[in-house]
Length: 384
Image (cartoon, rainbow, N blue to C red; front, side, top):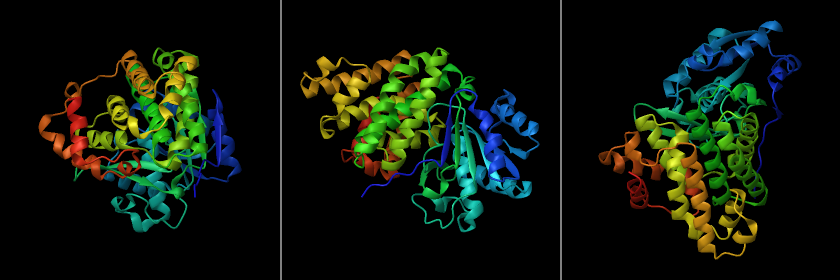
């Protein structure tokens, strides 16, 4: 049996942000809590939403204490902010961190027995659909606006935990590339590689099937042709990434991921490393590790990454697998992703803890090849 869960409503294209007003009014919403971060407020990105609300006389309050890799305390403070505001819905403006925070807050409001936050880990048995969320992504990568997943950091235990819950998906998503245009190059690169990782891991995970394969291959194709341009500030590239990352989310949300994400999560928790950078560094080595357990799928990946179909479909599978991995490495290098973990502060003495944390991560079970703690440790060490 397979299951597909997608957004109730999504809008695409530049200027689609204006649909927030129409959706809030027709749904009878009274007051929003805007969940965002201080940088987005400072640079006027959140203001694009509040200006619309002001013009329509729609009430709101702003909760902007979200930081990258949001913690349990961030969620608890957001729950209190929602209650004190007297809000009845959330507008999440930001990348994965604000949208993930919004999902956790919205879930706890309608399921208060999970107020400790940590009990939401995994597939928590929530009974009620979360408070309505309108999600406005400002990065092209996480696809949090279309997934049932979110990730929270447990600061006390220095670990991230993954939550997946059909009750947490936003009711409305606004995929407007204008809201993503202010991303600096480094963030565009990192979040774009996060999206590519979603597509490739989702395509090769144990739970993959024909419908999700359709999404993932198209997402790889769009991202491969769009990411370099997006990093260079080109409008077509930005539009492509906005769509490509969403399509990847439509797939992986329903079938899961693999050990790239398992290994990236503890790097974010321990070093506060940007999630997309961690994924980008890990993706090629995990692709090599998984290659023999993916059947013929690397042919499709190699083609979607821009390979010549006439060559790809006539080469031995071993050569095709190398071509697919090399294409990912080249894209990553072209947009300035570092290649060594030591270059971003990772220490040898932490590798065992990282490997044990990654092995325990919920994404590990979806990897196409079984991986032990020792296997994961060696993968980390190979790019230290």
